[in-house]
Amino acid sequence: MAKRITKKADRVPMPADEIAAAKAKAVTKSAKKITGNGVQEAGEKPIPLETDRLKSCGGYNAKVRKQHVPEEIWNAFENYAYIKWQFTRRWKGKRAQDIGVLKGKGKGPILLLGSGPSLDKAHSLLAKWNGAVICTSSHATTCVHAGKDPTYIMELDHRTQVAQFHSNWWRGRDTAIINQPTQNPEIAKMWKGKMYYFWKMVVNVALHQQIIPAAFGEWIKTYLIVFSCSVPAQMGLAYLMGYSPIVLVGCDFGIDRFRAWHYEKREKWMPRMWPFGKWVQQPVQSLSSEHVMRAENGVMTDAIQSYYKRSTICGWRLDQGQVFEAIWGLHRGEPKMSILEEFTKVDMEETIESQGSNLVDLVQTEKEIRRVCDKYLTRQKTYAIPLGPEGTNAGVVLQEMNNWRKTLPLYARDFEKMGKHIDLVGLTAYYDGLERENKDEARMREALAKKEGQDG
Image 1 (cartoon, rainbow, N blue to C red):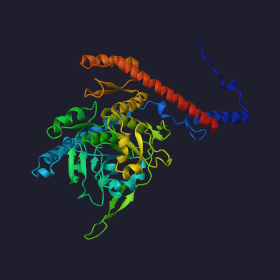
Image 2 (cartoon, helix red, strand yellow):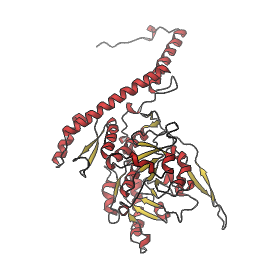
Image 3 (cartoon, one colour):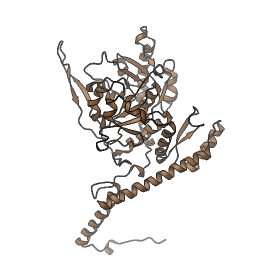
């Protein structure tokens, strides 16, 4: 086949006025397209919508796990002797325990803290909350500064530093650390209060699936599926302990972070000197990422935070507990900070001041929760496969499928061989209905965005 060749001599230079007109036309065309996507600045590169991109960051997380596993192995070796001593020390009242002893011990609602900017809004309200609070080391000192001692500090990140716990005083506070064997060894040695252990289940990682249970199984018998994110892990722990409902505060999954409070101690300490240091608030922080996107509700986020949102919904789909999202100024029209739209939203001030009594009439059935989760997850190419009748203890498998109509029958056949009955006809009809609903809503959003673009 002949190859088309254009010689340089054949090219006719374009006049300057025509070049300017062509550029103006291109900018106008780009501005129209960008306006439809919700980007305000004309001429900028369009920011993709959450629905335009598959939110599976499995490849990214696989790389992160590969980098972290050697460090976690080192931590586990370093922790082994000390954890053994914690569980077998003579003073029984000071021994560490498996988190299984906490199962069903929780009563009433619990606040679950995330790292979004709405936590700054909740800061002045935390002291008014009389119930339990669960958080990570990222939020622990912020809680103390607000006047509310965290009930549980859950440790997932093996890189946590002791400096993150710097407070004016921890002794005497009724706070327990929920620890795991691959954590920084300095954390266990530093903490003098109550400590409970679990081991985290991470799929396809031999360290967490086989080695940790074999090495520490004599003392640590309970595992949690952490879903690569602290929020679903904390939800699972709160559900295990029996707290209900769970109220999310600061779980925004957006592009911005909250401003944490830390206690900076004096470099030189002298007896009878008070105070020992001062409270300092971190400056405004935003996630630095080239994968910025606009969530379905218009809030700015990135691919990783969107992936963490999916992880949270997956955890909710498995637990099917009562979870609400506390929003600052819900009835005052405050700007949205959270990309979560699946949880029932409640006013933050009203919820904290009423100690959660305003949530009684908002309880959802498990069937309603399953439908909300499945409707979102199908948009992320993630599907729940019940291994028996829903509402029983038969279990459920969450599986990514790019073409579920082709792949689902294959999974159903494999599960049948394992003795698990899959209602293939019922599941197909169910997901067909959810898919139609999602497409109808997507068309409505597109039409609305187009209309707003024309009006603008």
